[in-house]
Image (tube, rainbow, N blue to C red; front, side):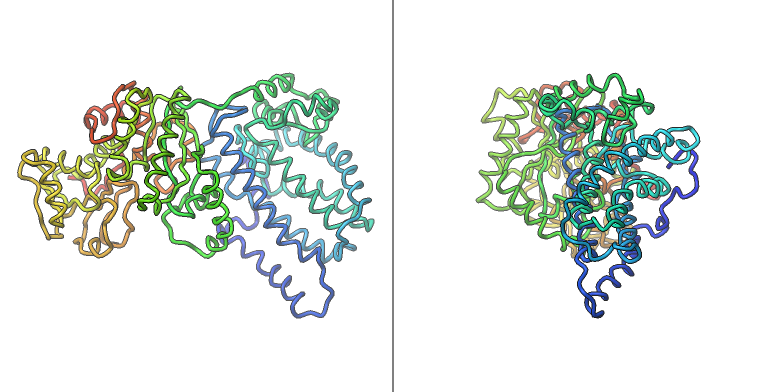
Length: 623
């Protein structure tokens, strides 16, 4: 929001929220009716309007995904600073301007003379569009932009756009509604001219709008992608094509580099930032960042590709919700992503965080949950994990957090096979089990004397059972085979606190993968479910309470946390990512994988020392 919002700041459909697309229904309905019922010639130009709207959305999303991927890798990065949740919220409705343009184009096709039944191609219209953009549009935009930086207009409108210092492609269209009206009138000059002179064509209009989207998105990337050889080969291009670093300076300095896409006008009127060339060269020379900590994860379901930061923000914030109709519509894209992961079959960077001088990168392995359950995939998965470990070692990483890679002893002995195969590893392997145990223990309400332990008996589950027995808290298991396994593992260390019980009256349940819906429904009223795995149980009971997956509140110094697990509270990160970071910050030299667990109290105190805070237990559950 601008510092002093003026009139027409908000979009007219803002009160509709996520139902804003309903405003397109009358247009689409009339559109369909005119072709199916009315006896009219088919107007291809009008027919292409809504498919073109979808193309613009896809085009923008491709830029968003590319930008987030390249920024996470750090190659040719311009600014080191990350973005925060307020920027994510501000830029969430980037499709508003596409809807606005679609409505105006639809009205134009109905009421502007010559706006309908456009030919597919006309060369003269293309030339006129190019000339009008390079002349009047670029010139008028330059002076409009300078006017928007006058304190009166800036405080009421343009400051909203400049709230994003570190830009993403979609920052380009984040403006108040009034600004978009002005921009549309400006960009309509070539469109209306060709329409009114009868030289317009479908290709000219589509290509011009796509050009505007392309240049807008490209110029707001936080990495440089225009190669230097292009300007060396054709020196005049530096006056007619701007670069991401050129526009990034405008967002940092505010009073320079006002041009739309052609720096020519900044050169003429003396507003070219003197550091434009040096920043451009410096950004091009910047190599891929070497992470200090690598967090290794993998895809879970075919749709989980959308839950990554590289995907759609609205989907990423709700990874556990059932498939909806629009997700089914995306199945062609989903299938393409599955094919790409199968062909590529190598880890890829999905995000990057910075904690003081420590860089934490998250790498994803292109394998799905179902593949982890197939014996035929075991060797392939272990090879990919091993390659990732060796790559992290080569890049100089201090710690590699196994995260979801550490699925169980049957896969790789909780990561122990890599220690045995590479005893001289410098990168420390951390599975996060100690911090996960510490977080779960500190989530149990004070005064608890008995808990139910239910779920797959992973390393974390066994460590929890041992710690609870040592704390003189009774651990109840529901199945004889689980009791026998734990009893054999703990022996006399259970202190007599491990019991086999069929009672469901206990008010505190520690649950992991494998908790069935039938078991959950047997819990008594007021039961607190505390997950010890990364995937919390589905909330079936309205009279019970559910804690989050093991996670902690992050300190403000941790940057780029907009890409954290968005289904948790904001600035909350899962312990499997935090564990590797704390391990690196403390400089610990031991591995935490295989069947060994670090000192839980030591890990907990170190995590708190670095500013990570436990999540609050519901007030009514405190003693």
